[in-house]
Image 1 (cartoon, rainbow, N blue to C red):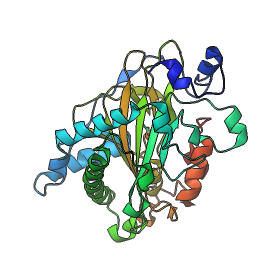
Image 2 (image 1 turned 135 degrees about the vertical axis):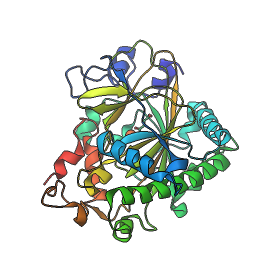
Image 3 (image 1 turned 120 degrees about the vertical axis):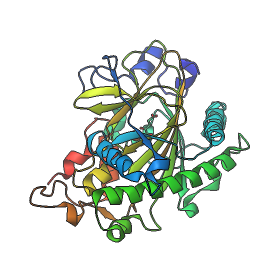
Length: 353
Ligand SMILES: O=C(O)CCC(=O)C(=O)O
Ligand SMILES: [Fe+2]
């Protein structure tokens, strides 16, 4: 899509001014976007080995070590057929390829945090009038849908075009849910905590939400980000991407996440860093823009029950590892996240003991 079309609904008419709405200040927290980044050495975690009873031990060790250092890894051999992965990407791109008027039929309502609908520039991450005037938009079109529990699906937000969109995403959602459930069991096993108590956070009211991200080519504008740095407020996130652009922050250095065919990129969100009392790390990530290629990501967020509190599990608080984080309701956490997203402040720092 041309820059002009992407920006055309903007109230500012001067192109220069419109560009500025997407530009990150050079001296801000974000660090120069064009600073040279290193490629991330991918940690490949084999799902089929991890979930087999015979050979799982070494793989589980790798799993735990990836989550304690990077907070992310590439999941391979997860069993989702290539055809379904390809269809998922195809129908997502077809949706974003629709005319703007068509996509706007599914427009997200202002300040919707429950996850339904289409938006340009990530404006839902603006919660107060003052941050709205100072907002720097993301070079991003987003489309969010609730997946689970199924009664949260709002049929009016599921697009009619492409015609197979609904079927493809029903199937993809079911596949992901099975993987998330299995990964959660492995998280419990790695942390060596009481499954029943931990699982209470993840009862029938827990949520899975989907976000499709589309990043148009970004020609001529420098210092523009596709998404600003953040760690997710989900427990775990599984991401399918078709081009490079996602970067992860570690030890104050940005690393480019490589695209590995058919792999799902898993990253942990802040709630699991909090619940594991800092044993597991959430991965801070951002998306950079590309002058030559459009990019798509299909992202599923596996959340705990928003009405419950998150806090370090009792058995993970010891003399050697005193409590690092306070207890907080997920709802309040999300509110803090949304308030801080613009400025790049990390919400997790507000909840340190
Ligand atoms: O597009 C990506 O690779 C990242 C998306 C993301 O971080 C998000 O939707 O929270
Ligand atoms: Fe994210």
